[in-house]
Length: 191
Image (cartoon, rainbow, N blue to C red):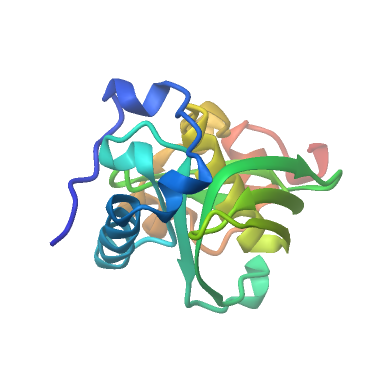
């Protein structure tokens, strides 16, 4: 069974989600929800899914990435759960394209911290500390944004917003600084 992923405009995506207690996380109901979220994320396909994206205002997200792409510092990340996360951002920012299962069919360049530290609870309600870089850090920031009612379109470089098809057709392969300069009507050396 797969859950319905809500789309931008649904109020649940714009409200802060409520924290879960360790007892709630250990409950059969939440454990079943985690499994359904895992199946839904994999089927979509996506690399993360937050509870607000399936209409539930809970501070709960599932994450898994099987890809490896050196250019984006993307490495496989095993399936795991974060609940009630607290995020600390590193100083360095990197820009790259993002999409979202709740903003279906679109992409945009989004600046994100290259490295993060996340303190959260795992699927059993036990405390975990995650240090992440590159794409994994981007996934964590994206999913944690969902738990606070923020979508990537709130952080995007608006002139880069495109359908996924047009991004692949017209923008793929152009280095991000060059692309942003071009979209802003400047020479790459001006940026």
